[in-house]
Length: 289
Ligand code: PEP
Ligand code: MG
Image (cartoon, rainbow, N blue to C red; front, side):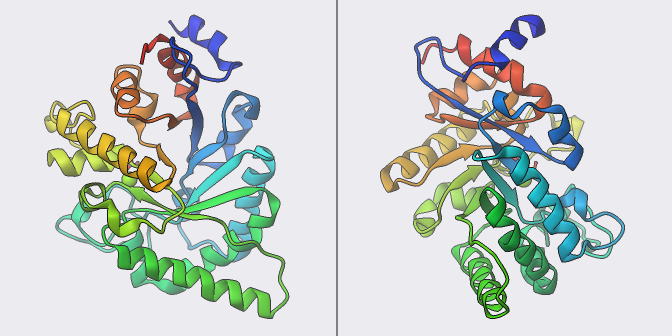
């Protein structure tokens, strides 16, 4: 199957019925882009930035250089960079806190808004990198509209600060991850965001109440459960109605067993791990929807 899959790499993804599907890649480290031919994908649907937050918090210059590298590599294709998603399954020394329920605690945008001085550094680096390509930025773990409003306000403040100093910059479209059930169930509070990116890893664990990192409940943690697929379909429908682009960047997007259900739910835009790119395109070509 893998040999056959390689032949799909070079072509744009399309179902058996001829429906085009955008397939982007998820980047979790700078070295990831070295192994990918940009011609084989439609851009970066998710750049996780946690790798930059190792032992010490990265300064603005370090972040700027990392974002610029990926943007220049991608050329005109879009690169969606996510602000740091620390906490939960992604502890960051000096940033995350000890909690009894880390998946339900201070993680993602909650932590970033609790430590705005750290988010502001990342925002400045993103604004400056924005002139080097087709940048979009999204926020992780959004649960209520106020979090998006506060994060967007920080972008506006930093934009004004850079402008006052005459620093070259560009404000990217701002979107949100849809990975907390409150957003998927009541997306109407987010009609002003530029795009939605469904995080099926977290959305599935929260809908099924089955942790993504616990093999004892892995049988319950399935994006193919009708509850999860129905929720995804309703987000896609809301996006169509409001003309807000909806994509999916969870691991399910690269899973051949899950792809038919995701396309049936209406998704036409997936972002997958680099190792899954060929397999995902081959699986899409088998789908008849
Ligand atoms: C997700 O939750 O599906 C997602 C893409 O984000 P992460 O796996 O980094 O939490
Ligand atoms: Mg997530």
